[in-house]
Every structure is written in C-alpha cells, then in structure tokens.
Length: 331
Ligand code: NDP
Image (tube, rainbow, N blue to C red):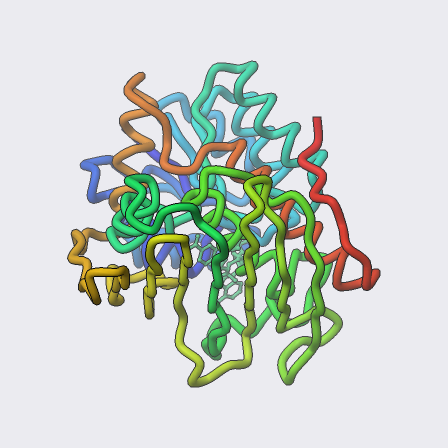
C-alpha cells in the first residue's frame, strides 16, 4: 500500500511514519502549507515528494491512502477532497470542528466505498485490550462506575495552537476528552447519554480551556467521571472500572506507549493482569491495512470518531452553560 501524509506534523514524525512503514507500506508524499518546510520534512523522513497543493498530491494515482494530521479545522475539507479522489483515509481526532462536518466525512467515505478510520490509539493498547476482556468476560460483574485520570503536563513542544488557538481546534476537550470518550465507549460498549462538566484555564490555556472535569451517565446506569488537563505535572494517568464483583485499577495507561500496570481486585484478592506490549500505532495501521484488503474493520472507524467528538462537544457545552447536556450523536 502507498500512503501520502496530509500535514507535516509532529505526530506523524514521532509515531505515524514509523507505524505506516511497520506494515511494509511506502510513504510517497507529504503536504505542507510551507514549501520549504515540506521539502525539509520530506528529506528528513525519506519521503519522495512534497506538495503545497492538496489536489496535486491527490492526483497521484499510485497513492492508495492518506493520513490526515493537520490542525483540527483542516481535517474536514482535506478528508472530503481525499475521499473524492478515491483515497482511503486515516484521520486524526477530533475528526472535525463540529458534528455535521464529521458526519459528512464518514457518510461521504461510505458512499465512495473507501475505508475511513479515526486515529484513536488507546483502544489498540495491550493494557486496554486486557481491560476490555476483563469487563466483557464478566470478571467485575455489572459495571457501576468508571473513572478516567488523564490530566497531564503538556510538553513544551506542543504548547502552540493547542493552548491558544480556538479556531484551529485548541483546548484540552478536543485534544484529550475525545480520546477518553472513545476509550470508555470501547470498554463499556455503550455511548454516554448525558454529561455535566466544569472547565477552566489553569495556567496554560489562552482563550481555550486547559482543564476539565465531567461526569457522564451511561444507558446501563453506570456513571463515568473524567478528568483531562494540560497543566498537571505529577498527576499520572489511569483508568478504573468498578463493578458488582470486582474493580479494575490501571495506572499509566492513558498514553501513547505500551506501558502501565493493570490490577484486578475481587473476592479472591488482588491479581496483576499481564498483557501484550505491542506498539499501539503499529496495531492500528495493521488493522487499517486489513480493512483496505476487505478483512475486518479499522480499530476505530469513522462512526467511532463521530461519537467521540459528540461526547467532547457535549462536555464543552455543559461546561460553558453550566447545564446537563444530552449527547447529540447526529442523524
Ligand atoms: P503539529 O502542531 O505538530 O502539526 C500541525 C500542523 O502544524 C502541521 O500540519 C504543520 O503544518 C504545522 N507545523 C508542525 N510543526 C511545525 C513547525 N515546527 N513549524 C511550523 N509549523 C509546524 O500538531 P500535532 O502533530 O501535535 O497534531 C496534529 C493532529 O494530530 C491534531 O489533529 C491532533 O489532535 C492529532 N494528534 C493525535 C494524536 C494521537 O495519538 N492520536 C497525538 C497527537 C496529535 P503544515 O502541514 O502546513 O506544514
């Protein structure tokens, strides 16, 4: 398979170029808004072509798929153009700035018959696959509640548009709450119904929130508590599920790396849960390639991306209005 990168981004250089190549796929070209930067990026990463014009990049018939990792406000138009050109699309989260645009991207891809996936990496982690298996196999009984700890220290290199540019999709809610929404949906197999929330700027956010706490009600009656931030240097991450027959405590698992510890506590005592330590992004790219070859579905598809965005938008609306908000998943 041959790929093009739409966006000369850090996430592509840190993880995704490697992940694409891990599947024996080639990267033919990269799009950057700045010709010199695009050329330098292509040279640095051994990519043959760089473009500033999206249509020119998409005109290359040898390219089967595109990976979109520009800032969030650009995803919608770039995805639609790629789909129209018949390319399969792996798009970064949040899919778009609003639900209508995200829904349009997914529907258009389905109409064109191309694979469309959302890059929610956490559901690819061995730790999360193990947690999901514990829940699905009934090891903790009926799930009563979940808590997500995802307050981190935003690295200096990422303190650009994320903290000061609402028009580019900045803020911790589109950045991290979307991932937590996807992770909870993945584990519980149901979609949050209603949310309440408080958000704040706690040291980094300039015109966007850098911290948020929210509570979600689930159709099963389970309650979810979720905390995301850019300003917490020492908090560490984690996720917990508490059920009628046991509790799962996972620490340092809300991360891009295959790390962290998963512990089950039940009537028989404490159990350390072992899991496979594969690369999260390699797995995602493998499943994407399989889907392109007609086998299975991507780890997070377009509908997953629409739903995680819907939850994030509800959390932001709840924080801004001070009211409980029913999550609108669109048509
Ligand atoms: P970056 O800020 O690195 O890249 C976004 C855009 O900024 C690029 O497309 C590029 O524009 C421009 N840019 C990047 N570096 C520079 C630079 N040194 N000087 C000038 N311009 C630059 O964003 P991220 O990689 O952090 O995020 C991109 C997308 O990926 C977002 O949608 C984000 O939400 C998502 N993401 C997902 C993660 C995941 O694990 N799923 C993790 C991190 C991010 P141009 O292309 O025009 O050159």
